[in-house]
Image (cartoon, rainbow, N blue to C red; front, side):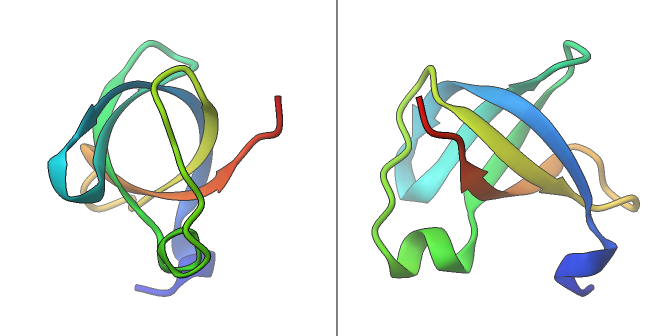
Length: 73
């Protein structure tokens, strides 16, 4: 699935887990597991609990996503 096919949703990182995975609470209250996207890993962008992020969510499996962008605070 291409990056353009993902639904971009805003959320807040609630918990950091091992292996570059995070628990993200979306604006509608739903939580999901998210991994760091390729650009985030490539440029070593750090994400910590409390950060506002943009998550790309597949329409086929809305319980997983990719963190595509971290908002500036």
